[in-house]
Each structure stands twice: as structure tokens, then as C-alpha cells.
Image (tube, chains in turn green, blue):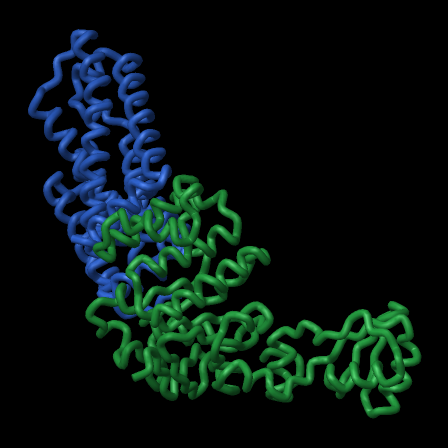
Length: 300
Length: 240
């Protein structure tokens, strides 16, 4: 049985259709990326799974049940919806203690999770003075309190510095390795592509695709960034070979569409043209999403 | 019990709680000191305790605000999310908040009486004014209960309205404009308004108010009704 099952979930707010007949599943033992542009319905779906909003139709099930029917919700699901959901006047430790008390957990567990997210030195400071990265760690700590089977994190990488990103990646992969189902939402593919095993992509409240990360990236038509001291020469060769090339004002670089990195590298080598850089450009999920759906740039 | 402990921790883990209680004690102690030391000695002799129980409105507003924050800060700061994920039986959270509101209301009332009576009565006795102890007990009991119910009213109203600013404004209107409402719509109905009931409970001298007991019961009735409404609404409403 899947840890999370969303079946034909629809949520309507007045005129707005936030989630539209969405179905997907999330399995244990892996990190699943829940991806889509801002306003695609990710947070609404997570809220429906957590029993905070009621579906207009369809079902959002955790371990096969609606959230409010779970015997022990704290051991089943740990959730972090928004890193700002903290009283700024409370200390990090004080914040966690209020949640631990409601869950019937001892305050020693609070210190354990503070240790896990490496927030112990700041635990007695008021959250007001926390950086965004520290707030994200605190939110993750709160989600971990009940040692849950399922973790649901809404945009956990938002506001993290690169060091924080690496830290988050390591801890999430480790938690999934312990057999937990980890669902993390993001609107930036590059934020999570090194973390997730599988993806659920949604747009305008609908499922765009569910599958492995490889399936998402397959058919990736991200442009290649090429730097070469003989850029003009290489550009002519690429255009001749059927690629389209855009320049950005720097004399030694260009952006190449419709040619793989292998094709570009081979072509350059055949003509003895040195290459200083040859890489896929960083693409946001929005780009990929627009490619997948072929829709215009407007997010509803 | 779990929800109760959590709500208590929420209350005591923010400075606002202590600031409100401290400010109330300070202001009420000062008010009692000024009223009893500067008041005309004959007036003080003639009157009962209520002539120097001034400033109680402000104390009620402080306690009401404390109660309102107990409910509304969850929505103001977004902690309602984790609160209701951890405790999906949402009515338990509201009941726990009402219980904690009652407890901190009693604490506030005791602090008030200690500061006010401690300073006021000792100054009066040093000026040679004898206070009827029966009247003093009635007076302080009324004001004390008014503070407890004021706090509870804040918790219950906050659970219904959720919005922090709106809750506090509604509370201020009800309690600070008390008396005025009755004037405009007539005392038949007006005396049953929360602010007027509070004045009656606090033994405010006026011909157009309910008796002290009835005032207390009416105010308690509002707390119960709003509390039930708050719990029922919180169960049904969506969070976020």
C-alpha cells in the first residue's frame, strides 16, 4: 500500500479551482518531489492530506485513511508547511516544546531533534532572530518530533544557502533510507533534482506527470551553455548542423538549442576548436514545466 | 491533558503574557495608591470600596487581551497549522485554551487583588478610614470575577473571530463603551450587553444595571455560548 494516496482530488475556493481531479501516490523509502509552479495547487494538496482543508471531491489519504482517522497522527506524519509558522517571541526550544506537549512527547525528544537539525546552539534564542535557514531547520525539527513514517515538507529548500541545501539533501536521503516516505514540494527543479528519486509534477491543479526523475529529465531540451575562444567559428558549424544559437553579448559564450552536449563536443573536437565550458544551463521547473505542457508563461 | 499542557506552555513561553500581567499590576497598584491617598477623606468615609476601585476597566481590557491572544495568535503567527495537525480533534484545543484562560484569569485576579487591596486598604487604614469588610470582599470578588470572565471572554471571542485585531477591537468596543450602549438602546436590553453585565458584576454604582450576581451570570453565559460556538466553528472551518 502506498503511504500517500491522492485520488481524484478536487478543491475549489469559490471561483478558483485550486486542485483539479489530481491523482498520485507516494511510496515509502524514497524522496518524492512534488513539483509545480507557484499557485499550481501543491500547498492545497498537502493541506488536504493533513486534514486542514476539506476536499470538494475526491480523497486525500495517508496510510489508506483520511488524516483525522489516523490513530496516532504524530507518529504517522510529520509536516512542515511554512517556516514562518512560529511565534517570533518564542525560543526555538519553546516552540518545539509546545508541539511535543500536544503530541504527548517528552521534552528530551525536543533536544534530540534540535540536535538532529544542528540547532542546539541557538535553541534558547527567540525565533525572531533566526535566519530563514534556521527557521527551515526548526520546521524540519518539528516535523521529526514524532519520529514519523511519512514526512511532508512544503518548500523546505526555500531560503537555504548552498551549504544548507547540501545538509537538507543529506538528511532527507538518510530519512528516506530508513524506510520513510518523504514528500517535498518545490517550484524550482534544480533545488531538488539531486535529492528526489521520483517526481509528481502538477500544473494548474492537474497532474502533469508522475515518474522517476530520469523520466522527467528525459527529453530535456534545456539549452547548452558553450564557452570557446573560437566561438564565432563554432557557432557557424552548429548552425550548419541544424542547431539554433543565441548569443548573450559575451564574445566567448553562446546558448545552443536543439543539440546535445555530446553533439556539440564532438563537432568542436572534429574541428579542433577548444572548449572551455560545455554544460546544460540551469533551468527552473517553470521552464521544464512549460516545456512539458506547452503552455504560455502565465501561471493562471 | 496533552492539549492542556501545550496551551499552558504556549501562554508562559511568550513575554507578552508577563508584560500584560505586570503592566496590569503596576497600573492598578498605582491607581489604588492615588485614589486612596489623594481622595477626599469624607468621600472615602461615605462610600464603599467601589469609590476607589477605579481603573478596573483597564485591568479587564488587559485580561481580555491576554485571553484574546491565547486564541488568535495561533492564526496571527500560523502556528494553527501544526496545532491542528498534531491535534486533529480541534475542539480539544479550544477547550484547553478555555481552561488555560480560566487559570490565567484567576492568576490575574489574584495579582490584581493583592496589588490593589494591599496598597489601597493600607493607605486607607493609615488615613483612619474604616472599610466595611463585607463590602470590600463583595467589591473585590466582583472585580476579580470580572477579570477572570473578561479573560475567558477574550479566549472565546478569539476562537470565533480568529483575527487578532478584529477580536481586540470588538472587545474594546464592548467593554470600554459599556454604559453608552445601554443609554442608546435603552436599559431593558442594554443591561444584558457584555460590558454592562461586567459593570454590574463589578458593583459599579448605577441604578440601571443588573444585580451583581445576575451580571456575573450573564457574562459567564456569554463566555459559555461563545466558547461552544468557537469550538464548533473551529471543528468545521478550514485552516489556512
